[in-house]
Structure formats: structure tokens, C-alpha cells
Image (cartoon, rainbow, N blue to C red; front, side, top):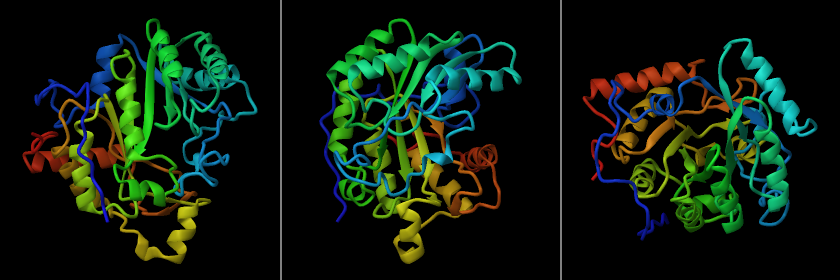
Length: 327
């Protein structure tokens, strides 16, 4: 049975309005980001060799059933290299394309606050000491932060651009349990509450189509997410990736899954955004995994920018916008 929770939240986003002033029918990240800086900013991924509490036995083994970090680690990322070297190689790669820009060190692989504070300080300070790096993007889990870590990041935010990204994934505790996530939705709420008001740029990841979450569930979650104190949202359609437990489940019990076809997802994500607080900045509508790792769904080679163009077209055809049904 699906369970939803009435939330008593502090630091809610501001009242219903349309905070952007441009032609897109949603509060898009690129427009927001350009307002923050006077030059081009590039994220450089870093793999510092972290793990997760649902991998090392603290809360479980095997990690999330959908997770294979090879889907987003670029060629220069390896924990066998120092943080400095990974950033230097990433910067060298992007410097060939763009002559003038600054960089954000993106601690992306696994849970990047899952260590003692002194270890975190060592990695973060090393990244910030690399010429051209003006801030950090730190991907983590809501059960892997505490007051000491947040106070340290708050201090860094006085001088640097600090982004803290939480993998929420769903608002449904039963689904979180089934995907071996190892934390509850209440812990997600608590982490966001603790992070608010610290001058941190807080983001959330949410997966549409997890087994156990119906289409109606996902639409209801748009309303729940709308009341949480965060700035940016990355949406992901569920993908079945080679080398994951979910790939084995999909092979053995495909009826567990209700994967989206491309046009279905385009229609659905517009409906989702219509119910979303218009102050939330949508950083991503979809995820794109390497073709050699992707089992399903396969959308005929459509690229991210092509899907986004179709989503914008669907908004316009429907005379719709983000927050149309948000109250």
C-alpha cells in the first residue's frame, strides 16, 4: 500500500508566482545559472573513492538496485588518481572547447559526505585549491549529513559556490525499501530542513517510474516535493542498466516494471511539472546513459536536447507551464 505523509515543514519556498522572465514554459536551470555568473561555468566530475552505507554493510549490501556509477563517470575519473589530477585532466579537456571559463568540482560518484569530517575537509580543500575552481557540487544521501558537516559547508559557502545534491528518489517509503535505498523519506525531509538557510544551493534528485510507484504516485509526489525547501530538481526516467540488481529483476520479472516510451514520458513530465511549485528550478528532465550499458527503455537514439525540445513543444501545444495546477 502506498503511504503519503502530511509534512510540517519550515523554510517553505515562497508563495505561488512565476519567478522567471524568459520564453521557456518552465523555470530552467541554464537561465538561472547564467544570472549567477558573468562567465561560463563548467562542472568537472571527481571520483574520490567514497562508498555508501547501503554498500559497505552499515545499512545494507549491494547499493541501490538501479545504480551503476559507470553510467556517468567520465574517462578521467578514477579514485586511483588524486582529486587534483582528475580536475586538471577534466579542465584540460574542456579548455580545448572554451578559452575562458571557471569550474565547479563535482563530487559525483556514490555518497560524497560519507566520511569523517577531516577526510571531507581534505578532499574539498584540495579541490578548491586547483586554479579556476570556484566551488563544489556534492552529491550525497540525506542520511549522510550531520550538523558538523553542514556547518563546515556553510562556512565554505561564505567564499565559494557550494551545491549540495540529495538523492531523494521517491517520497514512498515502501519503494525506498524495495530499491535497497537504506533511508526513509522522513530522513530526506530532515536533511533538507537542516540544510535550509545556510547559503547552500540545495538540489534534489527524483526518479520517475520506480517499481512500486505508479503514475498517480509520481504526480502526487510533485505536490509533496513542492513543499520542500530546495532550489533545483533533477528528474530521471527509470532506466535499466547492465550490471545492476534491477537488470536481473527485469530479466526475471519484467512485469515488475512499467517503463515509459519516449512520447509517454514527454506527456507525463509536462503533467508532473504542471503540479510543481514554479519557484523550483528544473535542472534536468531526463537522464541519458551510455548505449552500451542501457538495457531499457531505448528511445531510438534520441538525445537529451531532442527530448527537452519535445517537452517544450508539448508545453506550448497544451498552452501549459510549470506550476499551472500548483496551489
